[in-house]
Image (cartoon, rainbow, N blue to C red; front, side, top):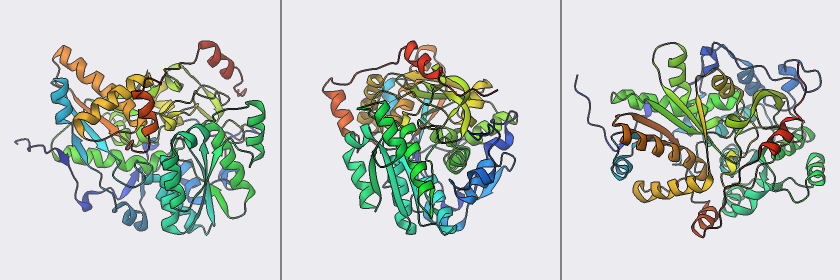
Length: 457
C-alpha cells in the first residue's frame, strides 16, 4: 500500500475527534501512589476531597482502572470551536537544520487562551456548573490556565477567581487583562487576601511567588466561600485525563498517513501537556504493542525530574493540600523568576513521576537563554511565535534533529507546541536586550528544600 502524500498541516474531520478521554493509569503496571491525607497520612477518600473538588472530578481522580471516560456532549460541542487541532510537519525547520529527521508538532495554540489548557478548563467548569456551584478558584503561572478557565467560566456563567504567580502577574499584564475581559478577578500571589498568603510573605519578604504559593491561596479561598470549589490546571490525574485529547488526535492523524513517531517530546512543568500528548502512545508501550522514546523537558531553574527526589510531598507551598508521591524539589522551594512561568512548579505529576521512575520516560533540563534562542529560530522559519514553555520542547526537538544529522538516522520526531507566545513579549525583549540570565539552583539550595519533606513511612 502506497504511503499517502503528507500535507504541511494534517487536519482531522469533526467525526474523527475523540469521543472519550483515555485514562493511562488503567494500563500502568505500577499505579501512581495514592494521594495522602496530610493529617492522617492515609489515602484520600472521596469524602476527604469533597470540600475542595467537584464530585465528578473526584471520581475521575480516584479511578485508576477505567480505561475510557465518555466526553459529555456539551464539552464536545465546546471543543468543536477549536478542535481538532492541527498536526504540522515542520518542513521549513527540517530544511533549515539540514536534517534527515522528520519533525512534527501538535499545535494547541489555535484558541483565544493561546494554549492546550482550554481542554481541561471547559471540562472542570462544566462539572462545577452541573453540580450547581457559584464559581471556582484557581492558580495560574504564566497565565494560560487562568485565561482558559476564565473563558470556560464566562461561557458557562460561573464566577472565576484567579491567583496569578506574582512574577507572571507583573511580566504578563496583557494575559492578565484577557482574564479580566472574560470576567475573572485576578490577584497577584502571594497576597494579603489569604492567611497562607500572609504567612508566605512574612517568611519570604519580596518573593516573586510560585505555583505552589498560588495553589495554597486558591485552595484556601475555595474552602472559605460557600458554593465554590478549587480547580487545578496541571499535576492531577483528572487533568491528564482531559488532556489526552491531544495525544488521541495526534495518534489518529499520524495513523491516517502511516506515520509512526520514534521520539515524542514535551515540555514538563506539572505534566498536563506532556501527559496528554504521550498518553495513547505510552498506553501502546505499556501493552507491548509498540515502542517509543519519550522525553520530558524541564527548565534548569526548576528541575524536578532531573534533580528532584521521588517522595511524598505537599502539592503546595502552604502545605494545606494532600500529599502526592512525585519527583519534587520540596514544596518550600521557590524557583527563580524565570520566564516560563507555567513550568515553575516544585513537583511533577504522580503519573509521569511513576513512569519516569519505572524507566519508561527520559528527562532533560535546559537553560532559558538556549530555549529562547531555539524559539526565535523556530519563529523565523515556521511562522509561529511559541510560548516559552513550548520552546523547551522545541529546543530538544532541534537537538534530536541535529543528532540525526550527525548520525544520518531518519528518525521521526514529534513534539507538543502547547501554545503561542504573543503575551510573552517582555520575556523576548529581555532575551533580545541581553538581560536574561540562566539561574540554576545550587545543590545546597535544593538539599535545604528537600530536607523539609514530610516524613511518610
